[in-house]
Amino acid sequence: MFRRFLIAAFAALASPAVPPRGAGAQPPERSITVASTTSTEQSGLFGHILPLFTRDTGVSVRVVALGTGQALDVGRRGDADVVFVHDRAAEERFVREGFGGPRRHVMYNDFVIAGPASDPAGVRGGRDAAEALKRIAAAGAPFVSRGDRSGTHAAELRLWEAAGVDLAAGRGRWYREVGQGMGPALNTAAAMNAYVLTDRGTWLAFRNRQDLGIAMEGDQRLFNQYGVMAVNPERHPHVKAADARRFVEWLVSRAGQEAIAGYKINGEQLFFPNADRSEPPAS
Image (cartoon, rainbow, N blue to C red; front, side, top):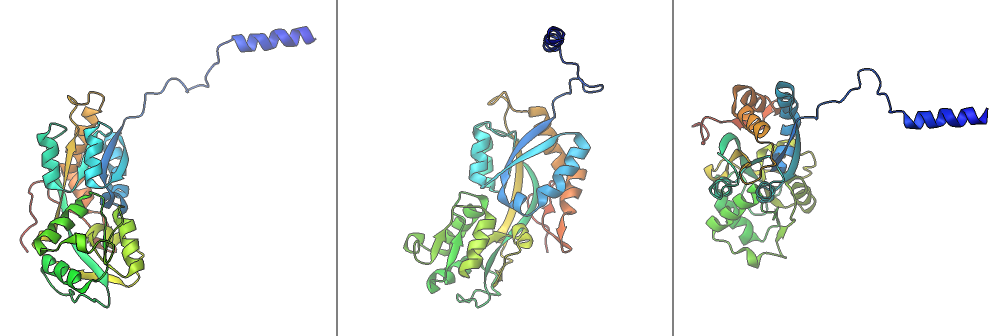
């Protein structure tokens, strides 16, 4: 009996495993990696549009959400197939350096300055962003910066320069750099009752506002354009070039643009598709 058991056990080990019916070799899943900004992720936009893209194409998307500068670096290293960000000057440099392209306009929204209801710097209701920052600095009112090389951080630094404010004097006093994404920066501003520059999409999706509200909006310098680029397969042959191009073309197609326009929170549209132009429509 024991001998028969050993023979049977040996035969079982020696025989190739038989897969269950219908469980033959499956084709690998088609997927791409997109390096993008925290605003597209934390606003909920990707949660809305990516399932629609996958439904239309069969290609799934993994998102690496970082500041724009870091996302572009991921593309430079070939660790993503697509870069979807919002700092036009940095994007155009990425293309000139041969890391990807062509750059395509996708959508826009705007930045706003959020701040405490008490408005200690007296900026509420103004329409000049540089003047608002100048007043914040003069009042020594707390201001939270992302400080993370993101598109939002780059826009903020341009505004401080336009305001003629030397930030070195404010660091460690009223100016605080958190080195994180938009959500953590907003949480810090809410906790400190501080001013902060934020993209409107993330602001609309943000729930922990506490005493914060929009203190200043409407300056044309707060226009916030997003662009998309496939990473160059000549620089990084391993990237999934065909599906990367498919994602780019879908974003700027009628289906992609309608998907972007259809994303709303409490009936308010967060991003405005403009693949056919680079500026917002005249108001």
